Length: 295
Image 1 (cartoon, rainbow, N blue to C red):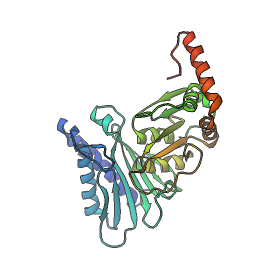
Image 2: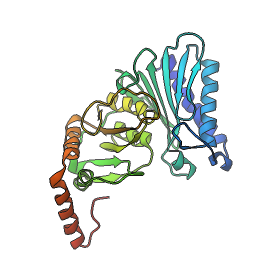
Image 3: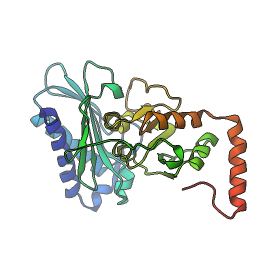
């Protein structure tokens, strides 16, 4: 997989790590807002600036850079061959608080193809805290340190550890019912980290049903998951749509395998009788002196 573009992705991750190591406490200060209206910290802008500089100086093909922080930027002369979608530091709030769940995400899509998870040709997810990069190329697998990744073989929801993003959201009854059936539930506050864990087999599924997840957070890890044997759809089981921009929010369900995925989608489709079952289960649990759910 070590072709020229793959090498550039590895170099970019190393550059991100070097940039972040050079920063002091002032690096964590919020300095502006990005096109989504979210706070941008000094380290977000420094990493993006370093990436732009690297691409301008070393890449010998024209590209379009799409970034969470700076929007769209053309690099090089001539007709672009690729679009590079960058999230310089996903989990910025975690990183600013020294919570070890943050990563860099880079997806590469041919410029003449629509933006979609199926069209991601190269992807890199870097774990900022461990200094570990996972690289994937469409049809050639996903690897870390020379080891090919495979998702978990767990197919029963009762044995599945599930990650779910809950920030700024309520938990609807079908999701609460799913949580009670699962072996455990985690919330990491970093989409790239959670989706990376699905690809590596550390967790069996990740759900984000808020309609707030934007493309730079999931395009790269989606390629990892697909190459490792996993499945990604929206919450109804339909394929994710083509990406129009980096401001539109999406829902996403990523699972280790098709059987588990179908089970999760079935749970999410439950409506009327779930309300009563959840209420009955919580009353029973509270009556035994336990907190509801398996967190």
